[in-house]
Image 1 (cartoon, one colour):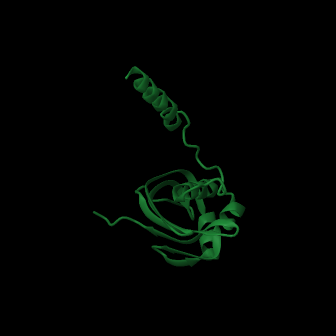
Image 2: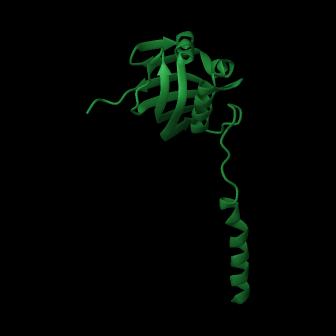
Image 3: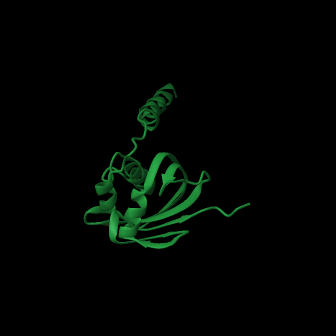
Length: 151
């Protein structure tokens, strides 16, 4: 009996530290991202840092975005993003669905800064991005941004 208890405790001691010792590493680049949330976090980090070459590479050639202003193609989206001056942002409420080579990621974003010289709304905005695995890596093929309805 004591022998079995010792074996069970040793097995448990070998398994449990692997679950708690190493913290999850946030992705530092698009190639490091292993899921939809990681892709979004890297994307917004690159936008804030104004690394436009990285942002441009992350958007598919047929990328489309929908905002309250209407539909934007890839070029118009890049110009829109380049007008942003993010001081800070937070992302949350992530939901990610994987289907074959495509992630659908929904989340909320609260951003502090300005766009086109005007302050950004202080309330959270609902976002959705569709990411697709292609030869060059993960690229965004569609994005939507919806402000919450006034209460």
